[in-house]
Image 1 (cartoon, rainbow, N blue to C red):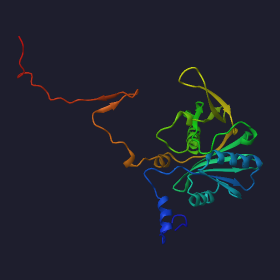
Image 2 (tube, rainbow, N blue to C red):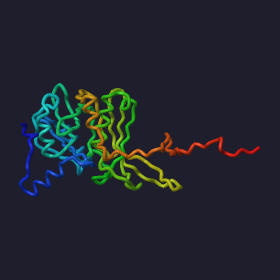
Image 3 (tube, rainbow, N blue to C red):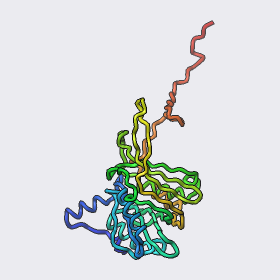
Image 4 (cartoon, rainbow, N blue to C red):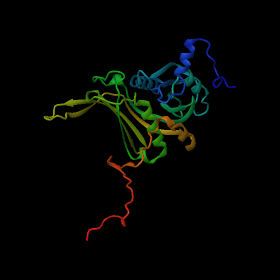
Length: 280
């Protein structure tokens, strides 16, 4: 039996509580991300990982030591680190002559690699290079994806799913208008992905709704798509499967249209026209 898949029987209550936290749940925990530095990562890649960790806090784990591995050839070390840190997302940064300033973003499913997309950094402006006021850590962002490629191309659709899971933050039922402090903007244009981060400034507009202005606060990235390792459609569908307990129960004779209007169907007893009195 593989060391990652063997059954561990807890002998202490503390260990039992730790394993119970990692068991499958109907409402899963917030997806944590591990940020891994490759064996030959340069200063640019290292700073990108630090900036992404700052955006991801407190749901990111940054490994400061270098890890000599190649995700597209061997995923064993990534799966081992995923199980140790209980992370379902990863970002791996490396540098070499053939693929300089390289980033690999991936999904984990059951502590195994599901999807991987390799991106190249063409231009980078760090958080510390932009001197504007920043947002506090743990603030939930708004995500905007611009470009037809995010809805047309399969590679870009998976990339959109990866970026959404990476930056979405915790799921909330309600949100205050003042809590919408910054936005992450992703643009797909001419084979490149432009990542920008803006702070929302609420200005007086003379009416109840404030006027919104955007101020760039960094980081800023120009990325290019390189290699992909995508799961099969069957495996991807299985990973997205929703438990039966969470599926909403269908109500009989009630339907909704595109605009959200609710319609109800009423069943009436058939009237006997022969016995019904007729007026002459």
